[in-house]
Image (cartoon, rainbow, N blue to C red; front, top):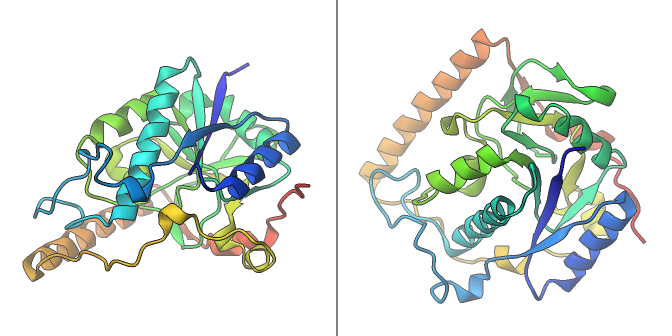
Length: 273
């Protein structure tokens, strides 16, 4: 049996979210280990030398404090994984609801762990280019991710992927989602179908009926740091070039654009007491 480590990122003060994740783990017959989230309020008091300062070579001119906090939290999770003896690791945010088949889907993916580096497990809401479906056990499917995707709420990764992500984020200037799932990483990156969990912020009916709010480490009021006009023009040219390349690659791989939001219609989360 493959040794899988389950990590969820959580702030000390977000006890309701911690309780939700622990109760969900119990319901699924799993053990989730908590990773202390990088506290936004301690920015500047903890080492954050990995985020680049503003510059023309950056993916983004500069990152907002909460974006740095999110990225550093996931770097912390990757490090903890590599310090363990686990073969695979599931990294999770703490606002997830899970499908009944979550554990089965992870086990199915683990059986083909030599075929991937990263598998995105959770739902997202934006249409994205995906490659041809590849069946794994118990009816689950993996599709190659052919462009940047959002929402790194839950993903499965190998030790190789964790090492690559840590090494290449020694100096980062992009959002976590763009960094982890980007084809630029040259990692074998897939999306699980059907997605086996979803973040509460994307589940309207649940969000309206729950007391859970957006994590305090994600709250921010500062504006996006866009940079000077020459940088914005250069960034747009790079974006157009990348997207054109992704579309050409998708064409030759017989890929297609998938409406990820529509999949949420069929998502039924488990009930947690």
